[in-house]
Image 1 (cartoon, rainbow, N blue to C red):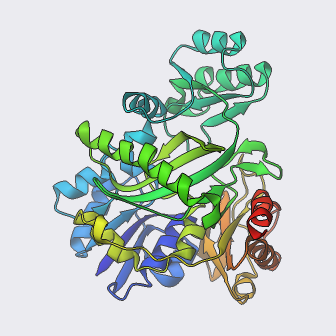
Image 2: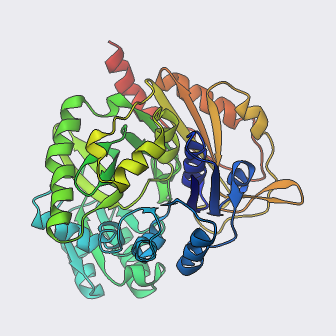
Length: 431
């Protein structure tokens, strides 16, 4: 089989790597790809937004299946376009992808189908949003979300009224996030532990992946502005079997049934951002695709042939597909460019990756990299995802940071506390 992976980040490198493990696959293309995908697949210089060009390429090269990584082409109707032209593709329709494309649509959908989430206010009026923030209706911290897509940077957790007013002015008046900030949601801050819960869906059936936990802010201790994600870890005990069943029964199944009932069956990867507080579980957000960087540690634990899963999704028989996962823990540390998540540097030479991967249990997934004149250079904000796998979380943490210390590029930075919160739970589980 010939496979096309669309995207250029660490998620896409992990997908290409995992797909190539399948004996069914003879060729993998990646559009546009990065330095890591260039080493194991064939990069194609077509951007993710060039849907017509991607479809023409898939037809010309007789691509059997296209796997879409990022959210933008999904919300723009890439799956609809490919299906119209008889091309196999993994991902939701544009209508189904509204679960991620519009925070307001997602909130209203959850209300219609009694899916647990936090109280909120939606508005396209700056004065109304400002007055709601001033009223203290939802208390502080206050969560402010841009309605549309904002590359993982559309959520602000305002600790005070002053921070809320600044954020609202930037989003709604100055339009720092463009049209994504035309409407906003003000939401009560939910306390607890965040969990990323992903499923494969064929529109009716869902296969859950192992749970993971993302680290969104740029600095240690969950401080600083939100990013696309500075690291993640995965281990089974993030969720107990009982809570996993609860999530499937009260959140996942109602979501799939609701989408089908509204005429937009969800076929693809569906990501649930959850907040756990004891046995209380609420949905923070949906993503219409694999998370990044959660994909890296999650796929690093997947033993099954991912192509069997994708075929089960296409043929709507996921209920007959069994997943096998490696026991233990995996962890991804994102190494970022100087200045990220603001204006960041590019073109810095990267060294030390072979030395890092010489450590047993380490895989370095490329995100913002490219080869120029035989040199590997940084080309994005998030540059590398140093990913480890070990029997325990503490061992995975030590291994990932040992590997990260072998890698060098100018002004690189990364969080030093990825997985730290999980160590407390690991100690409890060990007793």
